Image 1 (cartoon, rainbow, N blue to C red):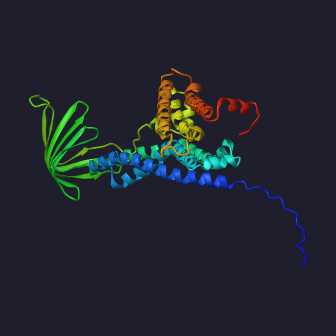
Image 2 (cartoon, rainbow, N blue to C red):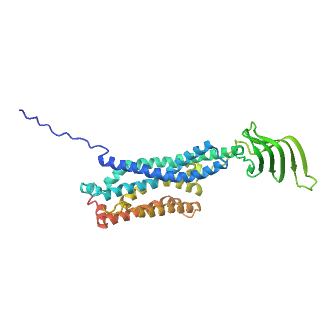
Image 3 (cartoon, helix red, strand yellow):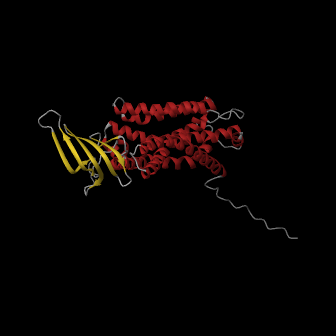
Length: 380
């Protein structure tokens, strides 16, 4: 039997994504999806209740409700990404510490830099997605929501009429009462009070219906009634009878209101150079920056003893996040009043997170070890 010829081992290039990278990234992705889904459901449900209340009052249509719900989900997803990834990182790494997986990895030569590299496969794409959502999708969804609300405010004069009660339209300038309202929008026994500048008129009619003209203006067309205008007892008090009389209950549909800062484009906010617009831009930039810096902080914060409690350092993380969120709002308010410079408002909170991260590293690794790393005597 002839021996097999000797074949030298061939060098293989290591894979770009190792087993550790795939494991950590997959766990982060699954946990992030679960946490984000729960938080978005809670927040959007609360907002949906207020939208549903407006629909019950006739201010919004059924079609608009679901469109607004979708837009609110987009905005809530962007706003909750930093907190969700922060919690997901704490959960995944905390479980690895409790199950002593981190001890096994450390004995195999896996240091903190290797953990950060594995996390980067998930954190960097999420940071990019958060930037797109915060800078582009959030203002777009706000513009769409405002447009839908504005459109429904104009058509609410048709849907919002309820029989047997007084209905206010056109910002209170028109008050309409109809004792009966049929399915074809015809009304019977109608009372209308309209105000134009300083003159008030009252109209009583037997019947009426709704009509829209070619300019998309809404009118209540009254039939067989009387109109009273002026103050009783004065010489200019007028009583007139009519066969048909129309009262406009809203303006042209082409009217548009000025967009709020939340709906303004991000580049417009940057080039405005006004404190309030720059504070709104800071609020948007806090989403991708929060994803990046909070995930960086979560690595030393997640270190716990192998047999510690299930929740680990969640309470400490909760306190840090509350301080971070309040610091964001305080710096935005100070920027709006021009009490702090722009650079401090944009970067002060993240310096605070870096300081906390450094303190946690010193607590976990020891000050002497940090000094050695700084002198390049040992590596992470």
